[in-house]
Image 1 (tube, helix red, strand yellow):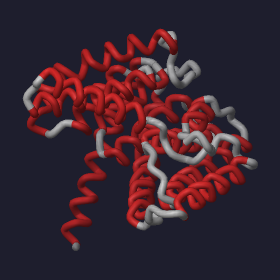
Image 2: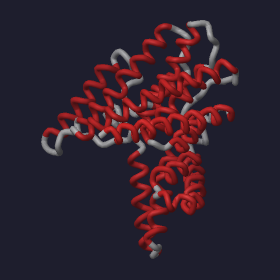
Image 3: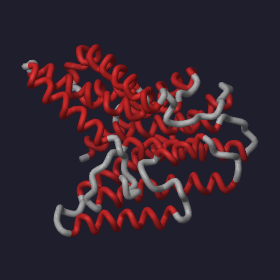
Image 4: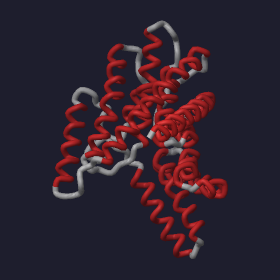
Length: 304
């Protein structure tokens, strides 16, 4: 991540917080079930503190880290832990949003365009998830070639960044560029470049043997898809909100790659601290995309 490779940075705080929580739980003599809930809540809190997203961190802990039968009880633990961790992080972040989102107004064309974005971003999420899973299955074995391979993936990312500067790193810069996209041909080409190259470079990094998160690569991909669709409509004479479409795309792709629609909707909304109405669109879009992806996965499994 520090070398510019295309992977997320969120794994470190999650793992560190979870490890500290387990050690603390053992010291306190907590029962195994509460130890697991505390570790999951701490992992979500680490994510919440890094991105100033307390509800997103709690949703991550409940929807992704906890077992189905423990989520209702774990929610009561995850929320205060994530809120407290986020408040501590304000000493550094000053409660600023991770993504600076321009003003966005609710209009009927924007709501209608959200349907196109949900479909496009959902398909992008399915493709990215499959590509990254393939890269992980075929990653290089640990050995002397590991640092050379990771350096090679970083070099490839660096060369691509000579044309498109938002490609290196976890994807936060690409997300910011998407929500701030001007209505120009150059912006469209840049967005398409991110849609094509970001998942490929992330796959190259994973295939080289690196370990990294996929949250930021996912939401940067989706944001670029959403903004590209919005700009296409703008060129066609339909006035829509580019920032809102980028936000919806980010949430939908993240929902599909992580198979966690509630987490994706709340987390992406908190990243940009968008208007309240965008949260409703995100929830509906992420739930719809998540259900469609699960139905498609069940169908593929049945065919086998």
